[in-house]
Image 1 (cartoon, helix red, strand yellow):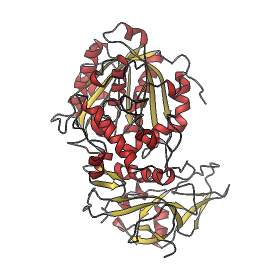
Image 2 (spheres, helix red, strand yellow):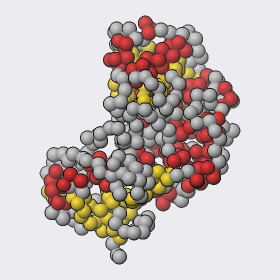
Image 3 (spheres, chains in turn blue, orange):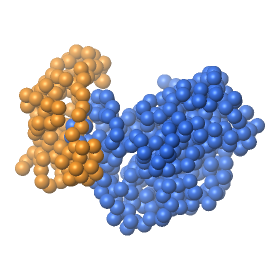
Image 4 (cartoon, chains in turn brown, cyan):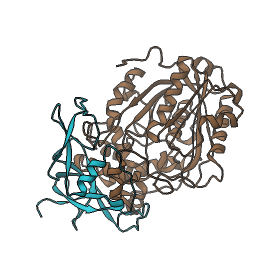
Length: 389
Length: 133
């Protein structure tokens, strides 16, 4: 077992971020979205397509791969590329793998992107696409159980039964994140909500209401990963990749953990913090994968910000608000900014560490945690620790 | 009503579905270490042996969680239905999903019993009802 990565910490950096607008209908192909976000990220870094020798993305058969985006932008020779299968559980793995490739010298400048028409073309809610050929799906789908909100609602109730987590806890998280989105010009949902609004929102799959669920969004987001040395010579302040970690996940196969109220983040976290030489108390701001309210609450526990089972009360205490001890999902998250499958979490972490997050800036933020889907449904997870240079 | 999601069985699972079709709730038993496993597959996760046999088990377990679905996913009509997650007594380190056959909602931890129900695509499903009622 690898105990540490030789000379990896802080050797690579995010040198630029780029977005397309987040909408309900982009009107363009995912290839167009990807190219626009890649160009925007390169422009942010002060680079052009001629500087790129690596491209990386993840997708579930719903988007343009690097082998299409490269030629479309006139990038003829990719010395490294990655087309990772998977959804939110591998979003951060893509950035981590790009950082490893750069640290290893296989590529010098990699653009990571995620481009989706997740509202207008290919909805995660399970409509408009066939079922994946997963060995687990055949034991679930015949019972009318397949869509992500159903899956997560099942885990959320297990957590409620085991630890006493309540609807009010979920609601406080949704309200807090919406308050952040109000301060984010990029966010799709900018009208403030109250706990009563949350409780009055319609049922999707009990215990989840509409406001427990993230948005389905058309949009793209991209990041430029290069060496720390090179990043220091570019347009923007570099944000260093201090740690990248990968983990397993919750499986329904016997022989696995079979604890639906704990995620693979609990096992990943010590590796991640160990790589960075930091602990949860050193984290100034966290972008935590929020496909649903519950996924944040369980990760707050599993990444060590509060004791196991106390994620709900921790959120209700105000700790995760912009002025709390651990501001979480400062852009509004997938619940309120938009859902670009994880990449917009990393981009927001970069923005906070560069100090350019505007009205939602966490003063003096030096260390950020950004996490992927914590290993439910597709049993894999990943996370990054970034820090200011 | 629950929506009809057509699924494809595979070479690991076909024999299991065949057994539910005969009203049998079967688990695999490792012939090397004796451990029961589910869902169906070739390797024992504990000892990596490939030798195993099917063994009929009681369709019993306890409620780990449940949802009440309201959204009209797929072919669903939005009429609420319950899906329960059960920890089967025969293989307590796995989790099974199924429909819920009682008029009331489940209770966390309650004992339940499997009921064989005709499903889409000719599959016989295993739904669940309270054990003592």
